[in-house]
Image: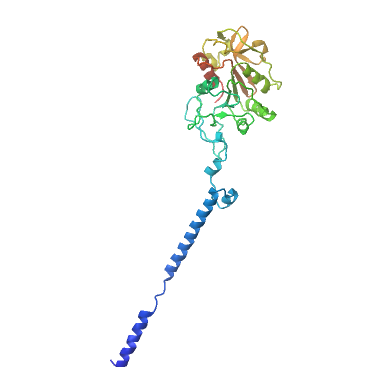
Length: 317
């Protein structure tokens, strides 16, 4: 080998060592994909940060970042946080969801306007007998077992129900009802085959007279009256749920108020009476019915507790 050939070989080797290595195509693709993913992650963090701080929900919806749990928080408190349960304590639960709507296919709902109903007095005894649960975290009457306002969207949903029960407990202040609310309440009992159970004294009788139209549309003129007990079961109770009640119901101080039998319409069915005063009766209303129980439940009396539970059984399920 000559001197000149050795020099040429060394130069070629030097060139090979000093030439920079070219990156492969696979490395370029990895870098590009990583950059795109990093940019997307940063954008998501920024958008979510803006949403939490009052970002326009319309923009969030267009970006596909809204969800049902977020939507549920905008509904009133009675639409979530509580489960409905049948009065017989079966496992039939129902709960509001924005997608499925209100669960008013359940059996019992109780009117509970805090401006009119004392949540610690006789009405609370009625609630306990019915087995209606309060919200689990603060024990308020704000679950979907309760209707807090007659002039509310709850009554609109309730008026579409069938074969259910609305309980009007004893109240100390008369509820204000719009014409529309009154119409929906009458649709509830006349059309859907539902039952309204009115519990209490003179205010309960006035509630029926002022708000419920009856089958003929002219309403009622029931005359409230107190009479000394005990109150005897009538023959008309045979064949109904009330035949399983006590033969006589006790008078509890002055907490019992009935109506004169003369003021009852001809289609009415009286179950318990004394001296021509009925303390438990039913008013048929086309597909539905109104049941009146003339005791405020100021005290837990077993015979009267049974009557309230039997009234629930009088409603189709």
